[in-house]
Length: 253
Image 1 (cartoon, one colour):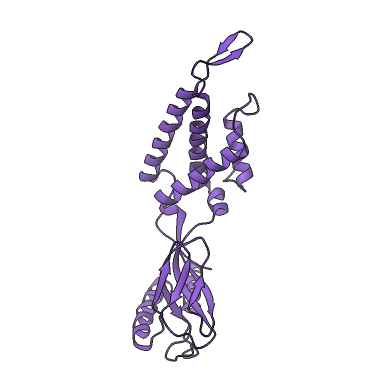
Image 2 (spheres, rainbow, N blue to C red; image 1 turned 135 degrees about the vertical axis):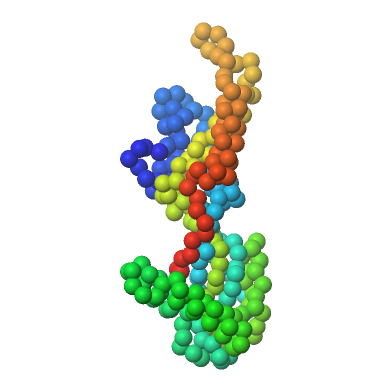
């Protein structure tokens, strides 16, 4: 990553960085775009497995339809925590106008503006919401299939209603690439993975390849060892929180 650059705008920027760090502009590196994509996908998958910085707690909204109990959520969703109805106290969802999400927004605004309210008020509201949900059925029971991304509401839906879904979801690729900490870790992992791929290809020519001055011995085994050592170092960096990960944040969107 260039010193004056904060993160990467897209995957193409990251591929170009990998090519430069492998000196592809000086010598012919035996990797094509598909190999770089494999390395980047490996980096994203590993980061999402290891780092809390790849996951966020969020609220998404779905519009229920009468008689429909199954809804497909975005691919980024990995876990569903709760389902909240906007209205409480009725079967139609048009009961009390006390809206938890409006209150959450207002309190977040007041907190950021340094005014009254904030977390204390939100905590009091959260306790109220939990009690009212148990009494009046503002929460739906559900089944969640993380493989198919299908959410099944265990209730007969009788009307159109906006339902808020509390989820844990993967932060999108573009956001991770643009992060100054995650972006650096991802490019370092993708570089190490690229070295493994390149080393594996070169190690197939153990006796070297013919050249003008005789056989040219390739550095396949050395490159594989270098790549593997870098991967292990990057795993330790996540465990030691050196890549800038942080506890789960909360967003509404």
